[in-house]
Length: 400
Image (cartoon, rainbow, N blue to C red; front, top):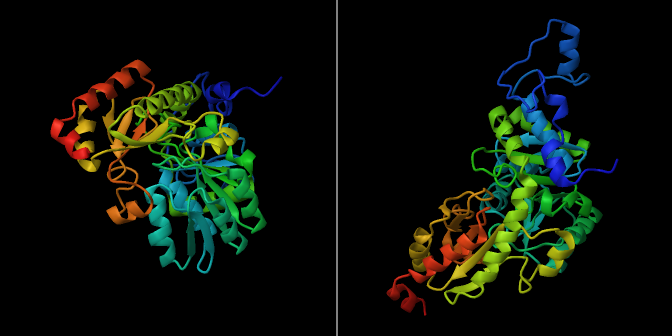
């Protein structure tokens, strides 16, 4: 029998071993500890010689089912989970970077990730080199100097820039680096970094994997050897995924393919519409022919994702008037949910950064991040049309 497609895997993968009492859904196991009458069995489980659970900070059946599902969806050998996406990123980097080490990355990463690169790692005497996103030659030159970690995010948050994973993964491995890719925006539906040469894949499961804005979580997938090292760091430092959150993420992932396919479709339609709006300066979406990373995205992605961003004339003043007029969009700091979500980078992805830091990363104060939901596209377009039409005349005049 052939390997099932990802839509089928999203529903069925990884759950059978965790069902109980004839249930068709994975149960939520809230127990903090797991008891043993046989002292030898207890010891064997505790030291990893037998399958089982000892203490909830380490492992939990519900959490393990979530890990099994994302492992299969990403085509990985192993997976572990975390309390949040940033916990996944910080724990992974802390596992592999030590004083005197060097990491190469790109300038256009999520604001929290960028803070790790610019604030925390330098304090730990880790040398950080951030290359211009899309300048593959510059990144290859830096990788040739040697480093311990190459960290990529593609598409990026919030400007959805694209990096050639296969090309830089090859250069990274030649330099002896562990290649890590944040696949949050793309999801396993649209992109498989491990198949393109990455060693590890990270997700903020809070976003598209869960898809309903009701559970925090993070995930890491890759080889058993590397994932076990990060798991050991996480189990000691304690950024454990809660079993109820794991259950909600599992439930959300059952519709992952359906949701992401619709979000791909909606984001493309919204991006094309925004290109026709005079008050819009620029639209950033890798599905557009005008996008600088479009050709690379076509090669390494099967869909262009549900995320786009656009800059408006008049900057922050226009943003202040435009966003509250949208009826079918939550103005919030999340993304990847079934509802459309909008917000400026200055209060969402890069709120931790100063205006000067955002400007240095090519993020204008008038940039709006748009996470397309699964609503009917006609309603989303009409909503944007009425919001632009309702802008006060003085705002429009000042914008020009």
